[in-house]
Length: 447
Image (cartoon, rainbow, N blue to C red; front, top):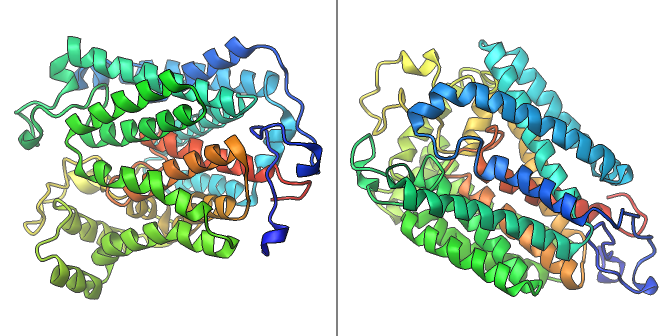
């Protein structure tokens, strides 16, 4: 698209531009209920970013988690439906619908139908859909960019407070301990999360939100969130998040400075394409692995490479529609196996394949993987690349892009796509839906 035809977004978050800057009228929103909107957004964020049993031990959570989660997710569903019905403009919700999102829903339903554990898959699907609704509600509640910054950064700050409280009062739960299967992580912070890799990714998302709040001149709130997040990240010991965070912060600004939408789209996909090729490509194609080993001998991604090769072999057994939603790891299909001697990990004890893309393929098949990649990767990149924003809306778009970039890259090494209330997945959802919301607010034309 020539530069002169690039469109300026006038969305729910758009700043009040002069009439000449946009042909689309601003969507009318209720001007009251600021505190109610903020409180609802806070409850929704904390439900996922902190969970319904933040200070329970793993044993207690497993024993009590079913009833707690059922009540919690049921309440979450009611809250989302009530909020979307009474406080969010319906025209906005209609504009967010895309055929590819409906295709994702169809894939989820199909994955339940083909699952050998249909009841478990159905329950997982319902919980996952509720979390998507929670992210949608959080994104659509604020009336402008400043409100979004306050609401979401405040949610991050309270979530951080829970983790720091856990470190002070429940250190045995909030830090990895010498015993167990990963004694090398002893002393590393995880807060209210079950692993330091999850904690580090979550606080990295918080740091990006804190920086955005600071840009919006909510200085104290923003610097508090960013500083507490970075301190936590350093103490989590995650090299992956430490390496990805600067890339996620800086790279969207490079994309934004590029003149042509096609070039921005290619640049948006470039980092993921490279890392995806290095990780998944090395597991699928021996030639790529040979090149990797010639450049960096002994690279295994902390033992993940042979785990991914094991996963690829399992995908080949059910290539079209997959094994069903959350119907592989932790099931008898894995736990009853004899441990393959060539693997550095005991696959019978792990909860996921440490790669979101491969786990998507094993659940939904290659057909579902294509649909998911289009909805989660191609559309957000196109939303960011095809539109020009100004002022605070531009900073908001870059923040969404930063979170999207960080989470999609992190997904090459961890697994969280559609994993119910996974806090990293929730951050990615906010970014994807936020970019879609901005992109639909164009000058009277369909996105």
